[in-house]
Length: 534
Image 1: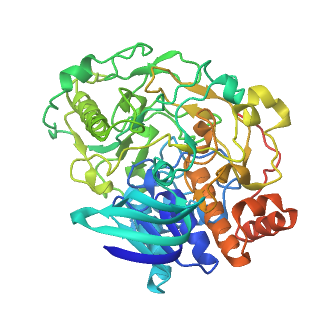
Image 2: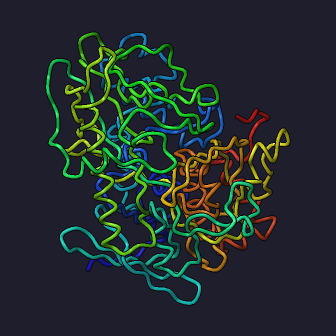
């Protein structure tokens, strides 16, 4: 048994966990950071998803440290890759020229950058990172968490004692282990007053998760994978609300629910890359949609093919959730999601329609190397929805929905700890619901949403803050998760420095102002300039 004692324990090394660690370390605290995989970065790296960001990300609307992460990723490409002279001079270099984001890149590059960012603190002995560990139990005393026990690979165990414990896990795993009050799935309209909420609560009804994979295309070669055992079942699978079998290029438009057939043609030209979801959702051309390496950005002849991440609605796993089910059922869903994604790959290689009237693209080659795996699938599933704390303040749809708020903009919070922006983007759910996609206003992150109603020294640092199922749809994306983690790490450090507790910071005007000044000094934006919704 490895036993450790630290100022702040952060369980979960996703974007929120890394941001929390950096904030706490900047303010002189000692940190233990644990991660279940062997990569830091969560949705950006081990889950394989390029950043989902708002239209103004290059100018404002994120923290300074998140912007530094983006620029360090670009700097990595400028330093080590043979970019064209034109690409090298681009201030907003987009290595993949993907349509989903102004910065599409390899997950492995982001993982390397995050490692380098934390390396000085590890060298100084102030940070210890434990890879391959997941939480299994926690000890509490009254309303405080005193320690967390974790299981590692090769039968290793660790028990870590800390003054503050931050839950940055992908599914909010510490909440049930610590007895912290929390919710899952859909709340009812009576509970939240939200226009898009159902009449009755549905705690087992959650957004689908997905197992992302990456491919390139080698013309004239055959890289067809072995036919998945469950391929016939997935080939015939068609949810009741879906307009075609899931293994196809036909899916609803998330915003209008109109049935649309997407295009998938390797290296086809489909016009200028906009990478601005206020103007173009980007998902009509699936080759360019989440492209993470574009051969046009590199010296002629250097790359034979683009590299593309497949994170499409057709691989959303709908048969069941990962939360609130027995371990055996959870494992079955994880295996099912992997098989669905491999079935999609096999369908693309053998049955997808081609412009010449033929079927299949056998030259599609799995690119697990960019994801750190052998099989082409990401290290971990892409998680859209977590357990969520019962918070001092819960962000509801009517706080930020453009249909409700209009030109007034989102509700302004006196206790803002950051900002974010994304449409309320809810993927189809395990309970059989189709998309919920609602225009939102640029919003703030209230401190009250980071404070559990009872537990005094546990803070959410990822997607597990006080949102509803509905508002999780816009608080779950990369820059917001980073901001939540950064605010949580800074809050824990502030409380240790001043001998106060998180609830006191919010309730005392002087303490709140001082904490917000600390955030502002760190480069956290607490409010938006006047901009339009979309």
